[in-house]
Each structure stands twice: as C-alpha cells, then as structure tokens.
Image 1 (tube, rainbow, N blue to C red):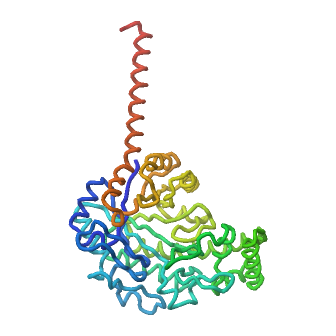
Image 2: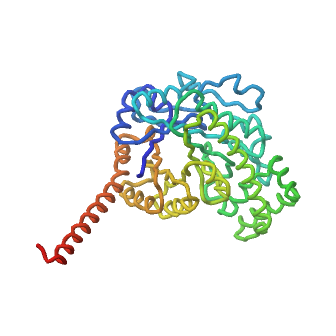
Image 3: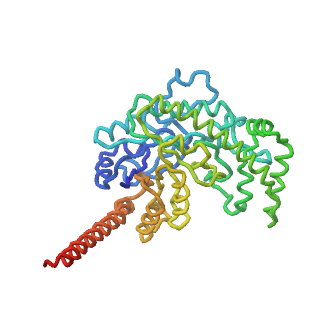
Amino acid sequence: MVTFAGHAYPWDVLGDPGFVDRVGDLGLDSVTVAASYHSARAATPLHPRRQLVDARHAALYRPVRAQAWAGQLLTPGVPTWLDTTDGFGESARVLSDAGIPVNAWIVLTHSTRLGEAHPQVAVRNCFGESYPYALCPSHEAVRQYAATLASEAVHDTPVASVSLEACGQLGLTHLGHHEKTDGAWTPQATRWLSVCCCTGCQAGWRDRGLDPDAVTATLRAAVRAEAVGESAPPSDELATALLANRHAATDRLRGEVLAAVRTAAPTASVTLHANPDPWATGPSVGITDRTAAEVDAILVPAWPTTGESADTVAKAAEHGRPVDAYVTVLPPTRHDAIAGHIRGLVEAGATRFSLYHLGLAPAWRQNWFSELRRPLYDRREHRRRHRKSRQGGSRVRRAVGDGTT
C-alpha cells in the first residue's frame, strides 16, 4: 500500500479554518508539520489573513524550556514572527482533533544564527572559509544540541512519526541570501569543498593517521585543478578516509538523536532524509553502513521529474527499508509530467510519498496533489482487470476441458 503525507509549516495550519478541510479533500494519510526549521521567506497564498511569513532565523516551534537547555553552548531561536511559542504543538492538536495523524518535521544541523554566533562549530572548507548555515556533527556541542532539539520537538505532544532532516553535515551547496554561486564549481570541486576541515574533523583525521596540513593542501589543489579544466583528485585511500571520518560523525549524531527521540516519543516511527550517494551533504545526507538498521524508513529527494529521481529511489530501496519519495508540485514541476513521474518512482521501489507543500502551493497547484494519486489508482485498476481477465480465461479453459458449455 502506498501512502501520502503532505508537508506544512505551523503558520499554514494556525488561523486557517480551511486547512483541515483541504487535507481531507486531498485524501492525505497524514500531515508532516515543521517542529524546528531553518530561516525561510514563505508564501501563504491560501491563508485567510496573510500572504507571507518571514521566518528570519532557524527556530524551534515549541517552548524553549530553560531546564532542557541548561548548560548547553547552543540553544534554539524563538519564532517571534508567530503569536505563539508553541506553533508545532498547537498545530498538532488542531490536526489530531480532526483525526489527522501528525508527523514531526525536525531540521537539525541547519542554522545560520548558531553558526554565526559560534563559528568554531560550523563547517569549514579547505580554504578556511566557514559555512555558518552548517553545524558540524563532529562537535559534541552540535550533537547535544541536535539530540535536545529533537527531544524537545516532540515533548508532551503525541506524534505518529518523526521526520529528521539535516541529520548530518551540510556542505557547499546552499540556497543563501541572493546566492551567486550557480555553475561556479564542477561536481568534483563541490565534493572537495564540502569536506569539512574544522578542528573537530581534523582531530578525527589525526586519529586515522592523517596530517591535516597535507590533507587541506591536497583538497585545495583538487579544487584549483577543477577550475581550469584539469583533474588532481585526492588518492582513493585519502578519499575513503575522509568519507569514513564524516560518516563516523554522522553515525554519532544520528545515534544520539534517535536515542533522544525514542525516549521522548517511544511509539513514533522515524523517517530519515537521506541520499544513497555516500558523499551527499545537505538536508538529505549520505547513507552510511549503519543508517538502514537504525531507522524505519528513508526519505529521498525526488523533485526532478526525470529518471534521476527513479534511480535515487531504486538505490535507496537496496538498503532494505521503505522508501519515501519527496516530490513537489511547485515550479519547475510541470503538470503533464506528474503521472509518469509517480509511476516511475513506484516502479523504482517507492512505497510512500511526501508532498511539498500544502502551504506554499496556490489552489490550482493544490489540485495536483490529488492527481499524484491517480496513476496509482489507474495502475491498481489495470491489475484488477488483468487478474479478472485471466481468471475468466481459466474458467473458459476448464469448461472446454470438461466438455461442458
């Protein structure tokens, strides 16, 4: 059975009496609401009171309880752009009271506010440049922050499941303010510029017998070579060691976050935003050797309506966990591409779909959410008719064989 969940922000649910009815009309199985989220300037075209929300920095949409955060270096921001400090909790109650299951959408290591305030825990590239939006999981303070954030997100609020985004390291690619970096680097240069070279990661290198100065020099040379159309990548041995170091930090972070979630919400299933490319950074981090055994499902990016998304789903399915395909009706998705896209993802192994986005899409694109399900119904109907046809043929053959009419 294929299931569908729609994504939303707390401000999409609160103050809009029509939101619950739209969810019902779309036939969704659940709603995934942001409990912690990075900064965003979000459209609200269907909300009765507003058209925009300017979430100026990353925030926890639950009360920031002093006793939970005491003694920590990193603490979450408060969403002053809402009338409540418990946007997620109140949204969850509205949906639950209407009989709609709620999934907590928790963004972990993506916070420019914290990276700027504490640059020592931010990801740093081989040129010494900081990525303040990205908190590096090699630091204990970051892991402690992420675990507490996840626990507090679901504290005292019943949820059906938890969806963990940015549960690992972000890299070079980032949709920042007036971003002017598109096309500047090759995929290989992007990979090497996404290798974190902060003090925490360098400590890990030393434990693996690597010289940090030599490593960063090698990475810089690889990036510069790509810029002039040449190739000078790190050796396979060095690349393997660097990836193993990142994955070890990712595993530690995920382990601490999962322990916190399962203590706070023991009945909730856990879905991880992930990517079968082991080098992937960002909201969907690379799957490690331990990932599949520790989570209940893997959510993979599937916004492009091309064969690339189906390939991503197929590779994720090889890990033996249910695969949730993350799809969007927002541009550049075309209406005429939806049916084929959904069929291709199901054939590749997707058994769940996460739909983006119930608050951002205008009414005429909201209708596309219903159409996302149609190819699956058409497919089931085709199978039903095929089975019926085969059964009818079998009865005819048996009747002929018996000499009866």
